[in-house]
Image (tube, rainbow over all chains, first blue to last red; front, side, top):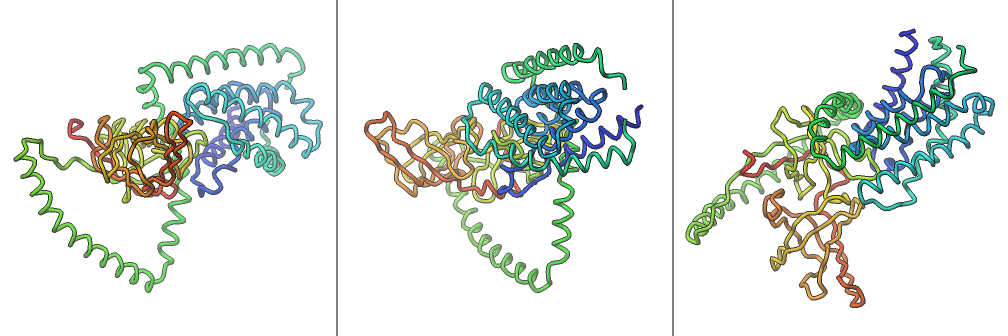
Length: 158
Length: 275
């Protein structure tokens, strides 16, 4: 019981470290949100373990780590994980590439929600390059999916 | 794994609670003062993450350091010694000039300028938030860092401290849309304000009247007004002036002097009343 949750938390923690790891400034606009992708994977694979509660907490940690106003990423993560966790049976039936395309939609929703909330709280204006991580995130999904599936099967996380 | 029934209601309830909590947090963080104390302790909790995330970079750095050739190091050493000699020569003059300046200020009855506390710190993480220009540095409450300290690098003003935890603090750069820096033009002492527009290599002068004397190439230095930045540190050079009489103000853009896209070592400056 706790062992399964421990492995899941470990993967989310690794994603958190990846999310704040320093990158050359030229790559910075393309950095995908790894934490959200990992959360989506677990919410599809084990929806009874990973759902909105864990998404909300991870969002709060991301808010603290990125220095954005508290609550923005919590809200956006909860919304996306609500969609995936409530439709996990449909989502699992798609092929990986179809999942990737569908995921691009969710990611676009996520980045737009984060942008809107930021727009209301601090004065920023929309730039098209804010949506680059949607493309990179969707491209990362197949590899991340295969990697996490291997991780889940190897450690028999249920 | 009995998940087929009875899960949806709970999921929706969780979503509603999550949304309400998030909105409360957002308003609490944005519109109340008490949030900054809570934030300090929460930031302290997550600060080990930054040291961990920075580890690969540090390892790479030490690895490449130990692999540089002796010849290259000797060359670098030579250059540094030469630069230091030149700086020392200027320092001799500086000591004399400071002394003279203080005497002149005393004659005028003005308060002499004094040395303030300074601290060198290293950048841990840069720009992980696309909507705001911030860096995280490796000094915090344990070294008496506090909010609204001025931060400069070897060339010019970088920004100011906005959030503190026990071992890290967050610096808002002058290019952030929420940041404004009171400056004056070095050439003629005209006062104005520089504000960020969210681009790393450009800032904007706000509310410049058409009649104001500003030219391309003018250096802007901090004016010391506003009480955050000490007087006289270089901020930006004017690069673009657009005087369209149809608009209420002239548009003047400038380029930050500090190399904001390659920050590594920073200096924190205390003001006198903060000691």
